[in-house]
Structure formats: structure tokens, C-alpha cells
Length: 259
Image 1: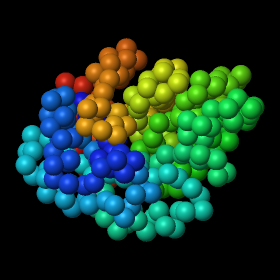
Image 2: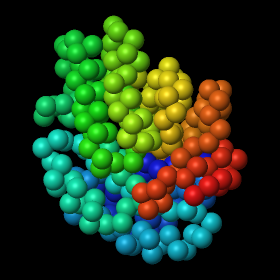
Image 3: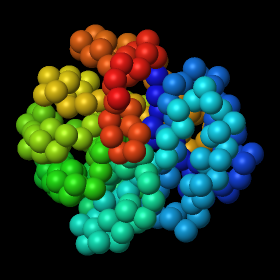
Image 4: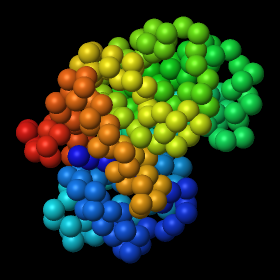
């Protein structure tokens, strides 16, 4: 069991302090996690204190504490993103898309705009940006793969067709896709990605990792046991963790099987 999508800062709801770090790590121990990864948003770059996280992690030898970064991918910002990623020894980086041509589509007040747009075009535009993020070579994980569904807008065309080219790029790049449980607490009330996409991801041999998208300590590891049971039904036997931007496989029984 692991959770690689944890936001210590939330949306700047708290500061990086020893006490706050311990709250997250204590919850990880309570949930019997093997690996927890802090991956705050790159927009809060100046508020990070990654070295302090590593210091506090030494108090928890039973946990594999990883340091990541969730990047809101924008093609025009690639140079800045590369500079930031190269400036610290991250264990992994998550590439996510929250914006389409300046439109922050996942803000709660943007639901009506989703209703006004053609759903197939919306999905295609979104997946095209995810594909660019995957092809950039900057990331090890693609975050909340079908985030565009969060307001329950479904395309007319089978989503597996709309996402096919993007998934192929992710496969060729050797990236992992996370199962992100936070979608259950959005209007769509469904994990990212949806089951038929997740089954296709497994069939394509794309590595799978796990993330709660926790923005507070109590939601670390939320619903991940349920995700594991779902993955087992598809035939998945292992999930992917990271250290030093290199993947390693973990069995569902919390047994490390290979670095």
C-alpha cells in the first residue's frame, strides 16, 4: 500500500512545520502504508521546505517517505518546469492538467462552462494536453488521468477511443498512471480513471500507482484498500513506487519485490 499524491501545504492551508509533517506521517502509519509521497503543487514552489520533510522522515524508519512535485503542465512553462525539477533530487514528479487555454476547468464555479461545451471536443482538447505532458519527458507519473469528467460530463464517443493516443504515448514513455481516489468526493463521485479506462491501462501494460490527493492528514490513504481490490479483479498483482525517479514494484501484500 502506498500513497504518492499527498499535499502537505494543501492550498496553502498550512505551513511546512515539523508538527504538520508528523501529522501526515502518523496518519500514514495508522493506515499501514509502506510508502508515502509528498507532492505539493509547483505553484507553491517558494513555500516548499523539502529538506525539512526528509529530516522529519528520519523519525519514521518504518515508512518509505518520498519527495515529489505535482506540476500543473503548461507547454509555455516547460523551461521553468525543467529548471525547478532539476534543482532538487525528487523521487518522482506528477504531470497534471488543470487548465485548458487559460481556463481552470476544475474550479467549482466552472461547472456551467462544462455544460456549454461540446463534450467530445472538450475531452479531446484535454487529452491532447495530457499527451503533451507525457511526451515532455519531465514526469514519472500522470495525475488523475480523466480529471475532465469531474462535473459528470461524459463524451458521446467511447472515452477509450478519445484517450487512446494519449495512453499510447504514456506507454511509450514508460510512465505510470495513478489511481486517484479524490474523484469520489467531486460531483462525478468516481475514482480517476474510470473502470473501463483503468482496465485498458492494465491491458496495455502501463504501470499503475496510487494516490489519495490528500490535502489534509485525515485523508491520507483514503479508499486505497478499495482500489486495490478493484485492481485485483482486473488481474493486477503489483503497483509502482518510486525512489530517485526510478520505479520499483510493490506487491499488494506490502512486500517489496524489486528495486
